Length: 141
View 1 (cartoon, rainbow, N blue to C red):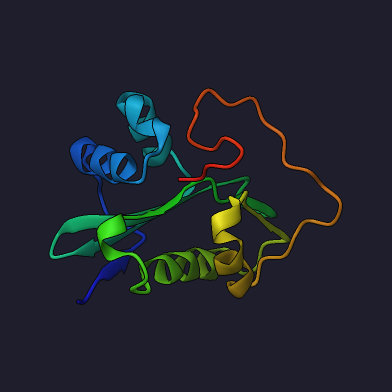
View 2: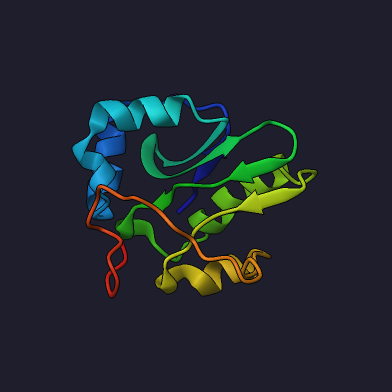
């Protein structure tokens, strides 16, 4: 199964909502806001198989020093086929010269991000005010 990763793709609401819904992410419940957020990201990487959106990753950045990767999703139908790795590699390549690359990882994916070169951020603790319920303690999407 071949997939194509792009940093120049366009996305449609129905395919994005389907991907987020398949992963149980609550952002799917706010499609207008989700699409605006993704389209206005500093970067957006997509993965497609035969024109079907099967993964995406986005970045928020100041454009020079700091980048944050808020979303990285792969459709459950195609897990463990290298798509997530290819998406993250595209993003890491895009931001390789930056001083600080950050993300927040749920426990289930820590090993994936560690294999990509990420390490725990010293003694920092991620904190948020979050309107969703999909990342509660004991449950990750």
